[in-house]
Image (tube, rainbow, N blue to C red; front, side, top):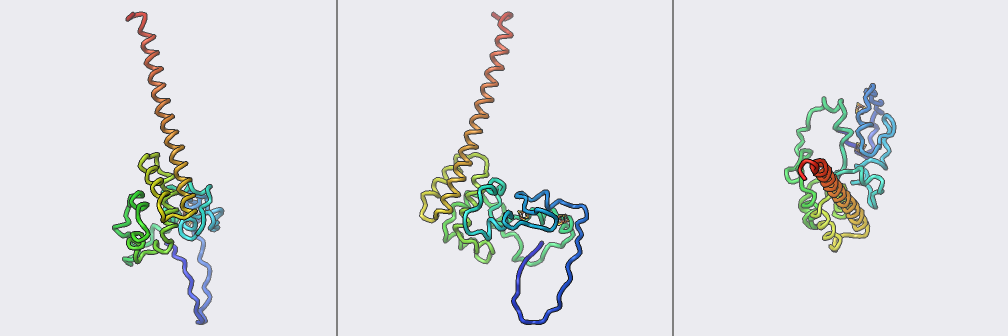
Length: 215
Ligand code: SF4
Ligand code: SF4
């Protein structure tokens, strides 16, 4: 795991040397990145990175990245997970970095229903807390927009839209998610209709074929 940080001190520390590049022919992180943020070996375009988009970015998430974010609502470690070098790294014993049971594979609709007070309570002591409730809702709205079509999700998005806790930016992401859900719902309906039509046509063909014998 890469953990970036910065300390401002006045100690005359020795200058370290660059680490050796050890990727050889591997390009796993480049090809696995959902948004194409690793634009060349060792070069990340931070503006495309889901960790930036869901955590650091304060305004609207650019629309081109929303469908690519899938259900990632806080950061993304795909490039870390696929890296063969990371497989050799031992798991940390620091319990603060371990998955919290409450946040293990949570239901998105439950998370989306959290009030601001609930969000602050549930994320006490977690870095998630620093994005605040509005960015939390913004990110989950995108994930719900990317979820399979569901009337339950559409109802939850409408309920949030009418809720006083959302601002203009969250509302715009909810609108986007509603549109994505409705398009998918209509596509599903079309597929169901096409399947039903093909079934009917097949039945008609079978009956027509059988008519001379059975009529
Ligand atoms: S964290 Fe995710 S989005 Fe960002 S560079 Fe890595 S794989 Fe790409
Ligand atoms: S996945 Fe790891 S080893 Fe492979 S290119 Fe990326 S950083 Fe290098």
